[in-house]
Length: 236
Image (tube, rainbow, N blue to C red; front, side, top):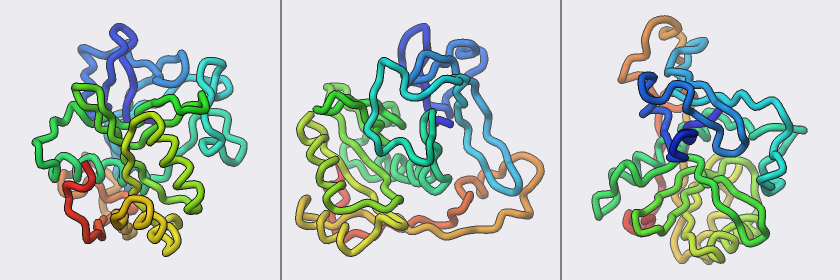
């Protein structure tokens, strides 16, 4: 499952929310392997809202011979791109909307890309959760980190980004939101990290019919609070 793809005819990025069947049918392609993807519109599944997304038709091992990824992407003997929790997916949407709302220079929606691929100094590739890709070429990375991670791992990945000229913001939550990680962030970036708080919700009453606007974003999340004493401009 992916929130974005490329158009095979042009190589351009396409966000799932902008998919148009009249324009894009049979032209949507996996960004990481040579294979088509098909579009799934937003819908309700067992009482939970599922955002529009793309599903790859690739059946081989991942990665293929063209792209080599960091081992962090492969857990539990996965052979294709790793599954993400719905909290992670909702976190990506929250961060994208937060950036659009808070950017002081009037950030354009087209600058924000989900699952942006970059090559690291090691020659391996990394997928940025939410990338701000500026017209003049600069990239700002926003990473949603919910799984357990150590300060040493955060620093190594931050140094990788720094070495290719990318500024990174770590949004910590769940198992990654530890005192050690927050203290490391304060020492490394000279500012506290933004923290994502998740609350489970019960949408059992919405198991049928179209998703209502006021119910969207509620899969496992009723509220996400950003806890920070920093100026919002620090994150752009």
